[in-house]
Amino acid sequence: MRKKLLFLNLIISMLVQAKLHTGDTFQIWEGVAPGSEKVEIKEEILERSKDPKIKDRAAINIKIPTITAYVPKNPNGVGILVIPGGGYERVVLDKEAEELSPWLNGEGVTYFVLRYRLPKNDHENKEVVPLQDAQRAMRVIRNYSEEWGLNQEKIGVMGFSAGGHVASSLANKYDEKVYKNTDKIDELSARPDFQILGYPVITMTEPYAHKGSRKYLLGKNPSIELVEKFSVEKNVHEKTPIAFIMHATDDKSVPVENSLKYYQSLREKKVPVELHLYQDGGHGYSIRGTTGKSVANWTDVVMNWLKANKIIER
Image (cartoon, rainbow, N blue to C red; front, side, top):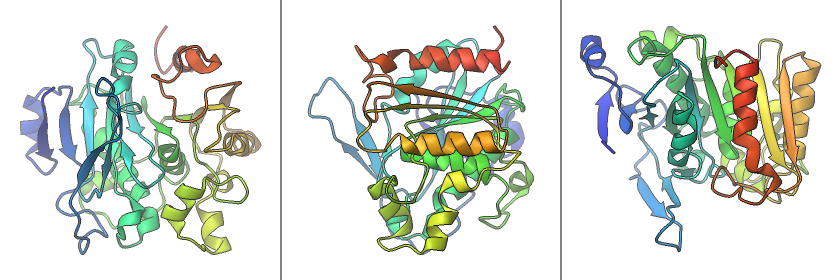
């Protein structure tokens, strides 16, 4: 896989001439990301797998947020910003990112994995840095949609676990002013056209909040106001994009009530939503952890939903 870092303040003509390839990695901010000017950290990649045949990498200490492209042989114009989980402590790089390629690329979908900054690293206004990066990434993708062969009206977001909290926050707070404009890209809409959430962290309220995500995002003793502000189910509105949600009822890390609360809020605001609850699957299964479990067909169900909503043509 080719790896290259392209800065988005390059002359547009250079980007037009360069065909997008799998593995192309783009720094989403010009210079230092807002609020990270005084942060002194060095990014590290941790290998958590004890089996040399299976990769389970995670990134920590992220100061320079990026998106990495995964490009199909026969693109259909649909683009997805994929936001992996990691409990706001790390960003997972394999099972909720790279390993989606055979499935999504096989269906003609171009996707971009966001490596976002983590609030545990004491960035300024640390609670909003993941949302800052998600908004900016969506605007970058939309800005270069023509050059990258994407339909501007078919660019969505997919998030897993804590990445589901980032993705659903983006889906509801896409126009919230969480940073000052840095260039013309920031004048574009950050609203995703659809959202797909896998075993997402949604609420920050007890007793259903994921304790690790809440601690790293909001601190040990957050105020009631802060908890309310970052509980996504309390921020749904009529213009929230259509949603697909999946969750296993035996999830012992992120209670299924997170998805139930979000589903109910979306229904109350009359936002089209489809919810799939599975008997077994646990947490963090993505694709690799589904063999022999009822959750094994979730990728087929997602594709059927995308086709039913005419995001992907049948």
